Length: 264
Image 1 (cartoon, helix red, strand yellow):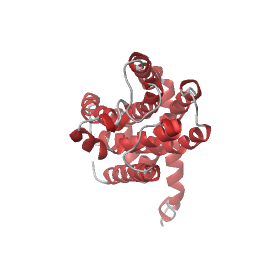
Image 2 (cartoon, rainbow, N blue to C red):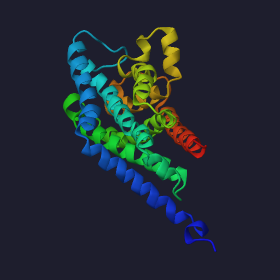
Image 3 (cartoon, rainbow, N blue to C red):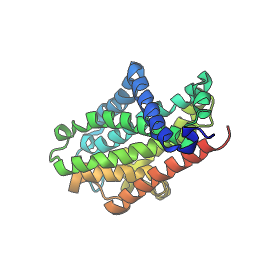
């Protein structure tokens, strides 16, 4: 006789998603060093670069100082750092044996991926919102509606970056290797997203790299929403940037689910 779980597997899906997401949430906020590292590092970058370059840097096409220009970039960096710190736990879970135990449980592997993504995205959103509330004090003419619309944009970007981190971490067994990959791939992605300098001032070859960088469109979306008409011109219309970010998020979650479905 089939068990109730085998006959009706749906009930096992969402409890597994909720349990894994909640574990990620509790685990993150219990480790103060991770909280401080994910939030303080981008803030320090913003303070040092924003105040240090404000009088000598002028973003072409932008009618704001560098502190305001760099604000969306720092916000993207917070989402990126939080995603990295949340998905690196996959490696710890594998080394401690927890991941193997979850993988052999009746819960579908897609539930494991979704729980990790939702947990990491929720953590990123909390830290991103804490930084977002500073926007009216940084931008001379804050876009109040834009700040509200920035919330779903941040959520899409958080899902995309958490999914990307999960794709990177799923097959790895070394946190040192993960950090090396982060320095090689993720930090250049952020630098070449328009967060530090606009695409208009970049060399032609670098502008081409920025055009194929999905993080560029996440930054453009947040910059346009938070700075309004003062934001530098983007590579594509705002609606196209939103579509690209949504597609990026969907692709990363799908790839992570596919990786998780393969035998280890």
